[in-house]
View: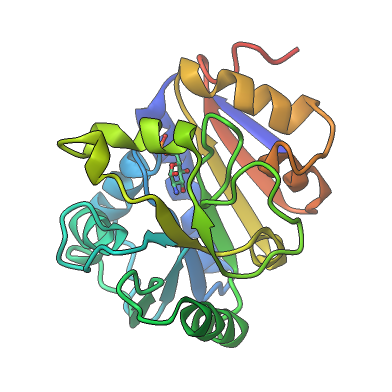
Length: 234
Ligand code: GLP
């Protein structure tokens, strides 16, 4: 893992912009994208930049089950607001939270991910070390699946909703196996409440209990962390 330490999240976004530019220069066509507060400054930088994604494809990591794309809490809506409205891609894909048949939806998304091999995958990390919505205990070979969110993730995500009861309890997520197939992975983590997860990911044993620790097995990972997220590292 290549670890880049930055002062704060704003600087992190600027570093991430460089990684995206390099990927485009190297001919990357498919970008795996993430949601959450972590990539927000990265998307701000991409939006401000002269980058053109009109010949690129995007595939997102995950989506809540039961939310329509127009729902302001859906990840589809988040992506439009933060990136796609300003920087449209040739095609953009997310799991369909409203799909009637979960198995079919997962199969559809996996087929799509086979067709569009991810060149650069952007990731955040949950406080419990989850990536996408692959919660602790998830299989390292996992494909797209419907996940029951843990209480800790529901609590963490409740800040985006009016009531905790409104936070969806399920989501579709790319599996760890698929994430690991990406050519390059860029993981960002900012703030004190990510420090333990960051330490476990980089210095801990590789274990399904810390899903992000699997990245130690990937040959091309860039980690961008701020001082607070790095504060527990040796
Ligand atoms: C959610 C998302 C993850 C994200 C994580 C951290 O559970 N599914 O992709 O990395 O939360 O979110 P945040 O960046 O808001 O801390």
